[in-house]
Amino acid sequence: SQQGEEDPQALSIQEGENATMNCSYKTSINNLQWYRQNSGRGLVHLILIRSNEREKHSGRLRVTLDTSKKSSSLLITASRAADTASYFCATDPSGTYKYIFGTGTRLKVLA
Amino acid sequence: DAGVIQSPRHEVTEMGQEVTLRCKPISGHNSLFWYRQTMMRGLELLIYFNNNVPIDDSGMPEDRFSAKMPNASFSTLKIQPSEPRDSAVYFCASSLSGLEKLFFGSGTQLSVL
Image (tube, rainbow over the protein chains, first blue to last red):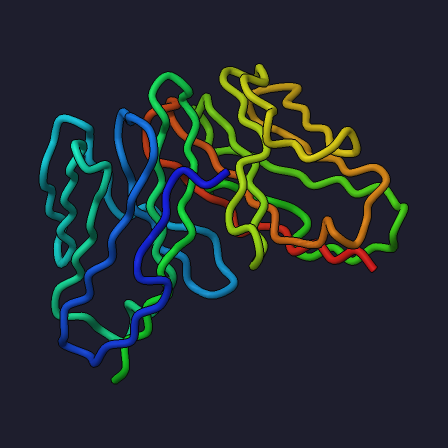
């Protein structure tokens, strides 16, 4: 079963705008990760946030984590056409040491 | 660093045939994961290994599926006999430990006719 669910399922924005994706999960976790998948390719790691962290930045990416609400958000600022991809959150239900992926958000950035 | 290497890239087979997917993890990584991706079910974790030992295979859908990791640099996922509903993209991923970021291979696109 899916541990995480992303919201929205699909998002279409104009180049230069910000894109926000949300992830909700069900059980306690050690950390949460975000991945990007371009069409027909493997997943690429973007950022990892640990359960004791609330916010993390990496370039144009900003991730927040609210363990009380069991949710995370990924913000991509100043989006580019090259950001067009599917984005997945992945969580490791505590004690299991395995990663379960969410349903993904399909982002389309229009030039 | 060559990354995670999967083969074949594409596999087309007929129902009932045996299919073997191969994965070479990144050197030095001690955790290996097999995932299956379909439009209907998304990314499903099939099995993962730590230090070549299968830790959790609860995601393996049926006895037709089996996975091995005979050494730290090679793993196989076998489907015997294959069925059309097995058609999917199968990904292998490795990590330095069970709690760090995963590195994915390019996947094997499997079509069972």
